[in-house]
Amino acid sequence: MNFAGNPERERVLDQVLDARSLTEIRAAEQELRSWLKRNPEDTGIREAFEGLSLMRDIAEEQEAERVSAERQPVPRGKRPQSVSGMAEGHHA
Image 1 (cartoon, helix red, strand yellow):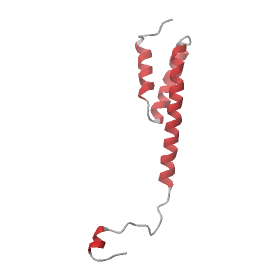
Image 2 (cartoon, one colour):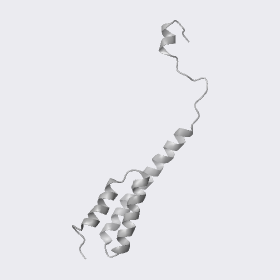
Image 3 (spheres, helix red, strand yellow):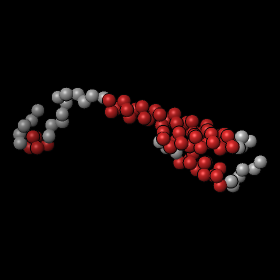
Image 4 (cartoon, one colour):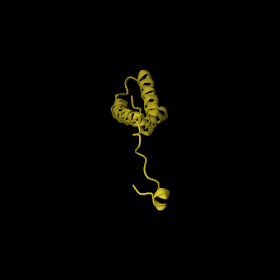
C-alpha cells in the first residue's frame, strides 16, 4: 500500500520532525507506535524511529547535564567583588 500523501501519516511525521523536548519526543514515539499498529505494512515510517531515538538520546543527555548543573553547590566565600566596593577604595 502506498502511504505517500496520507494526511494522518504526514501529521505523525511532522510531529516527529518537530519534537525537541523529552516530552515532545515521547509523544511522537507514541504516535509512531499507534500509526504502525494500525498500518503495520508501512515499513518506510520505521526510519522515523531511528531519528527519534537519536533525538531522545541527545535530549536525555542534555536533561541529565542540566539536572547535574542545578545540583552543583555554589562554593562559599566565592562571591564576585562588587563594582561599587572597588569604586569606594575597597580593593582585594
